[in-house]
Image 1 (cartoon, rainbow, N blue to C red):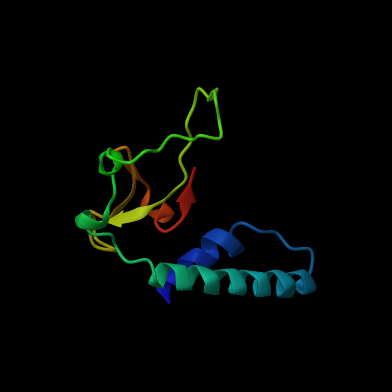
Image 2: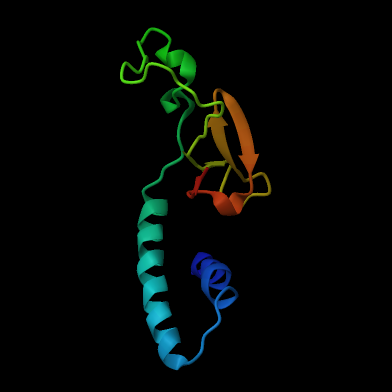
Length: 117
């Protein structure tokens, strides 16, 4: 329940302003649907074990050439990653992280189970 109260405060009560009670009723229903989906995602998102993590070197023997593009013109590569938990939930050592080309990038723990770009 404490997790719900925290999310409710961050994403609803402290963030939104309302014109009237009817608007609150509509937006609270939307929030509850979104929170239910979020809760299902979080409860099904187990911490990855090291053996399950894939790195770019794991694909060194695969042909990854894109035969549909003759000249790749991009000068930047963007990554979309889900933030994973490191260490025990609620511990002082807990933090979020993403892995980019075998480099762990630490992120705030409030991003855990959310996607970052």
